[in-house]
Length: 406
Length: 145
Image 1 (cartoon, rainbow over the protein chains, first blue to last red):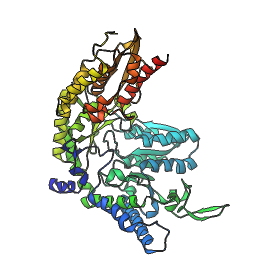
Image 2: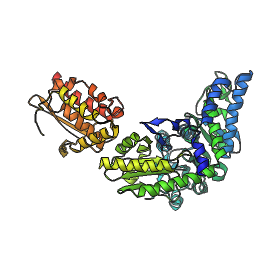
Image 3: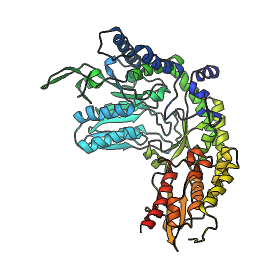
């Protein structure tokens, strides 16, 4: 398996460059991933040979661009195992997807006093859109707490849901803790009271096989840039009957069937939700990134990254005064930690001198930091190109920086 | 507060600092020296750690207290992060005990010459920028008054 992943690393040109005179060890995959040659080439080829607006022209070039764009939608459908491409809406990313669901579905279906449940480990992008909606229409936003390991408790969720609960919005994998949530079981609990389920797949999609029909969620959101694809493109999956009934989120070109000053008829799904010229090359690049992940095999990726995580956790725990934040039984390739007496920013700054890119911040999940009573953590998050040598360099650099700081 | 008036001019202090830092070829040794400077920083009276003295825009917590004594500005500052503490020590060595005019107008080119580029470029995104702005504005305020 190691040899296979060593070959995969070779496909990422950015990793060949030096940072502060040393080869780059990129361990900030939770923030964004690097891009393989084939994704870069797909985007480049689009601009070099295939650029035209989609769904418009009757000429060959536009038809080819449309085929590529719609081909990417089909790839995304397969990737998520959605029933139909009508359920695949291209958006800017998870943030836009959740805002779309909040402002279109929730705003037209929920009323004052209705409850949306999120968990304590959500990224700000799955907190703030619901707070905005709360301020607009008076929904109640409830928070499912996590335990000291950074896990949710299914029984606590069972105790929380009621006929007032209209939506459970939950991340499949925490960016700050690495926790993988039992979204299928959580969805079942939510459905038992008739609530809908939204899953934030920003962190999960690069690391594990996702099947929206198996989870049986109503909405699923992903971001291309976290899964080896371009920035500014993502997918909102939603069940067709929901999308059909939802009002458009934005108005403009491409989302209409006919327009007069009196009345506008909207286009069919999914175009009703894709106003304006879309991020065509982004979608094509994302489709290529999904094929890249499928060609490696998501189960194999999960197994390899579990090995990396296990090794990193073991080595980190050898360091005096280091505490891992987030020790869920089911965890993806993310390890967050703090060191007694060391400010995370100091650590990350010194590690940068060794060519090691880690994140030191609240990870856009301030409530998680509050739960563990830390202002920030240092986070190493893994991707397909990381290897055991990266972790050895991480540990060496940490030890040296720690000596400097204490 | 320690009201000792520095014996060297700002230009001399800056030149000394550049010499000390560029003595190290390896950037990491420069960081080590900066961090050690921070460790020698005199403690800050708790009564000075107020919201008013807090510098916003820093990723770590930073307070700067500035008061005037006999026509000169004296400062105490503190941070919970080691590199920022080093930067504070560096700035205090330059600015502490100077006249408001000197504080408001001292050139900052020496920061670029020290060779810790990212940390020491006082652009708007860094805490260093906000710290320098606060110190300079105290100087300007007193010239205007």
